[in-house]
Image 1: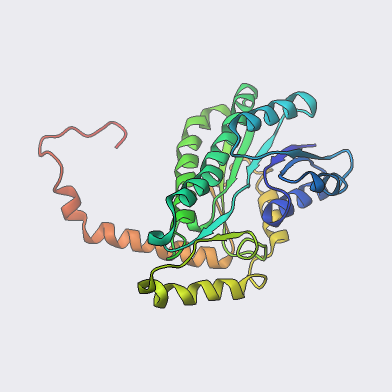
Image 2: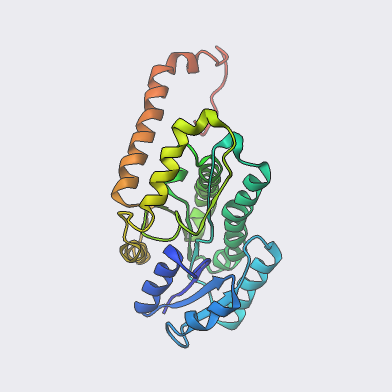
Length: 283
């Protein structure tokens, strides 16, 4: 029986991941923000579903929680750093305090969760660290600058971490969902107030479309959970797990645009080298 630690299991993909893992016979420790939600979560699988109250922006509490799980429940085999939220808004209109709050949860909450679990996995030379980023971690759309920036940051963290721990038998996977039928775009979305009319033509239709699409998204959370579980038993799990046909399409288009820029400006890029400069060994 695996022990899987998942942050943010009250609703959405986090709840779907936890439910699927419990149904498969795993032990799940899930974090929640509200005491009233504890009993309902633990009732999903008495004895195997363990709830912990946690605010992932509290670094000390994250480390205490992981230490308690290791000592009281058992070694953590898989971490899914899922807790996070969306911040919608035009960059110029979004208060920097809101951007900082977005990073506190979406980036530093993930960093604390992974860093807290890593020493135990490193000593055991085994484990799987996962974090839910987004298709917005590999592409970006107008009106989601702070959110996409936070997810790009997590992608970079995971990319470097993966190379640091590869020799310890620890896998690292970025989970990159597209649009799924959760509350993410509805009640879970924080929205910056509009104030600059110049952006109305661009952004008003985007905000309206996102609100109207909430609850009608293409992605099925239960199928996403099964996809995540399916890679846990593989010898070489993916570094990137893209979920959803919309995510595949939009990420591919974004990567193609980067490739086009690289090809178009290759000569200019090369022109900045010293003529007699030595290449780094890793190049």
